Structures are given as structure tokens and as C-alpha cells.
Image (cartoon, rainbow, N blue to C red; front, top):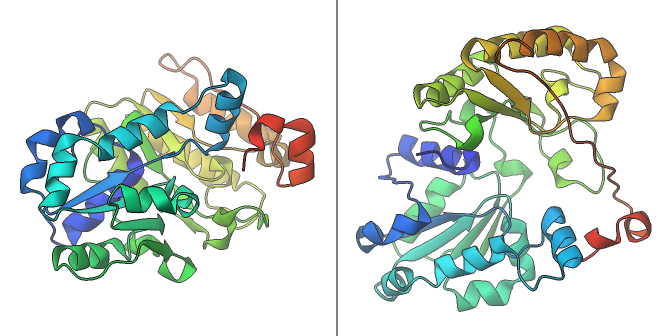
Length: 301
């Protein structure tokens, strides 16, 4: 079974720390929850406040996004409510954890014991131990910069990730004031670490992979100019195991800084198995005034 990459990272960390962990499809939760002491929930967009969700709900005039509906229905499942009455603890995390600061009443009403916001590797084990020992938990734990794990502290996934996604680095070198990614230290994974995760996905039969970073073309760079040799080496490594390779993010700035790099990457990736490589370009800004003028459907926050 494939699962979200961030959830696989937390799963790996807890296994390393000696916890008995099982990653379960929400539709099969009833088969396992009666013997569970802690339910961990990974959420991407629990209240539909993400940019894509707010845009689409305004365009379609929808009252609630699918992500919000299914997150709420998960916590309202009869088996979850039954387990809460016997003392089950619920800990929530994931990319959408920031949204709970705007919905604290939901946290209280749905029995969420702790929300972890930020990189969880250095804090999730301790919080889980507190939950198991019925000790007090913070309603929201902010895993800030001091909790950011080093590359050595970040475990490799032990089970396959959705879409074959693997992380190649964390943080960003651009220091944009409106983005919290830039406050975290910039860390690039060495090839050996990336190789281990590639093999996990390939062993599960996955032949299409997504490289994830704030800007894939800046792999191994400490500034905004691509390190061409390292980027090409990375794609050669991935192509040894995957028939199709894509990216989570890149920028026109990185492409413009080294136009020849795209040619080199294309020569590696575009073969008999992979026919195209593309990027969906968006116009983004951190200015509230500009958002109101040119992207009004994103202005719900």
C-alpha cells in the first residue's frame, strides 16, 4: 500500500524509536482501532484553506471542499468516537496543520489531543510517549527552527509513497519574507539517502517517481544558481530505477539561470519510456494588494 510521503517519514521515525506502528487506510480503520492507544492523522488540507481549495470553492461556489468533508467524517466515524470514549488519543499533523490555529473550536469539539505543526522527526516520539502515559499534551506543538532535524536525523522511508514521491532536500535559499519554508535550514540529501528511498518504491513495483524539493533544479546548490553537474547526476541516478521522472516544484528563475541545464536533463529523461517533461507555471506573489488585484479567488485568508 502506498501512503503520503510525509506520513511515511513519521512512520519511519516511530519505528526507529521502537513504537509499534501501523499505517492504515481510513476506510479500514475499524479493523484496527479497537486495539490502538494513539491515532495519528495526516492531513494536507483539513479545512479547505489551501490556495487551490480556496480558488476552486470560490469559482464553483461550493460550501465545503472534499478534503474538509472527508477529514471531518474521519473524526466522526463511529469506531473513532467509540475509541475516544475508552481513552484513545488523537494526534494530527501534516502540511495542513497550520490551519488548526484558525479552527481551535474544531480541535476541542472533535477530541483532537495534539496538533504537530512543522517538521516532526525530533518531536513526534516524545509526544507519542506522553500520549501513551496519559501525560499532558500541548494542544498545538510548534516544531520550530530549533526542532528542525539535520539530514542525519531524517530517516529514510521504509514503505512506498504515493506517486513514488521522494524528498531530495528541505528548506529554501531565497529568504522570501512571506514564506515559512525559508526560515528552516537548507538541507540537501546525499545520493546514498535518495538511492535508499528509490529502492523502497521500486521494490513495491513503482516505476514513476516525483522528486520533491522547494526547487528541484537547485539540488545541491547553496544559492539561486543551479549546480548543473549535481542536478544531472541526480537525474541519471533516478533514471536507472524509474521509467518516468517528474518534479514537485521548480522555478523560472532557476531555469533562466542556466538554460542549458534543461537541455541536459531532457537528454537524460526523454527516452523510449518517457516522452515529455513539463512544468506548470504559476504567477505568485506575497503582496496582499497584488493578490486582491490579480488573484481575487485566492484572497480568502
